[in-house]
Image 1 (cartoon, rainbow, N blue to C red):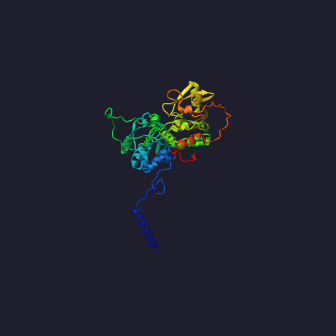
Image 2: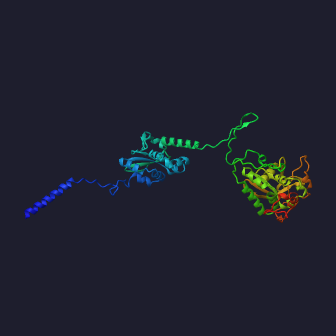
Image 3: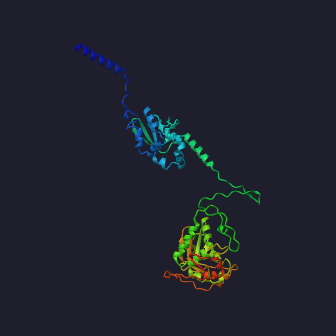
Length: 453
């Protein structure tokens, strides 16, 4: 019995040994752990993700190149040329960056990034100008990379050199140039038929392009709407399309400022209710013109007589004479009259000019009894419209050098003393609207500013 049991045990051991010899050998455990391939925590790729070159690491992830770089590191050491973050964030052309991040240009982004990876460990040396092959398949001279931080990161499987700028391979640059050329010709603006000059029977040359915000090429008088002497006025045509400024909002703002400032209700009334000058001023400012308004106060408007308003279009003519097609402030006008003694400003009422001179520490407009002092400086200044308060209504001289009929009908007055303690005038309705309602009542409509009752 003992010999039989011993023989049975020997047979079982021999069978187990034979089965063990026939079983396939298992592979050694991977360095990544859990039996899956991976990279070591001391790899140059992990160091790139944790380095100061975060912009390059983000682009590598967006380009789906992590697996390709892991394979390259698994085959041997690599050299990564990493541009600084500013070169990829602020210094990169926005149009080129937009081209790289488009999903259809993923191949171009991958080629650009692989152009910064050399499949060998390369240290800086006197022979660094030799061309090295990159993972993108195009050669690169290390001297052209402008290395600023050599050996910034050194790991057993590779090295990272910091460079000054992004390296663009020729293939990516050509693809970007082709895409940019196609984008430039993909949308062609329609152009009108060529115009022929009837005098010379030749093609008219197109006007040169006007840069954004440039002053208008036409004089302000040519841009104005036809005056009241032309009846009926033509329908407003289309604008030039160069409305760089919101002139209507600025005119509305300065009229509201006149009302809140106090003492200029009559001027606001005539601008809004009696004439269409507010709309005209808004259009001019929208086209890029600037204006300085010499604003008579309510007491000055009250001195206007009915005879001065009897002629058709006289309210427009009076206010056009108070508008200077320049941007002037109280300081600029005072400095001009102090330096030159007498300055003549153009007005929107051609061909009349308004004369300014220095008097009593202020600016005096006009001459004789029809003069006015600037005593409310810079009521409104926004860079396009300037409003300066004056104490009298200015009337242009006659063409023969004498007084105009309106100026002759004006009552004589003494120039007021300009003092700082002058009391604020009481707000009242002047004679302007009273006379206007008698002769031009059909043009006056109810509004928040005034009404004829």
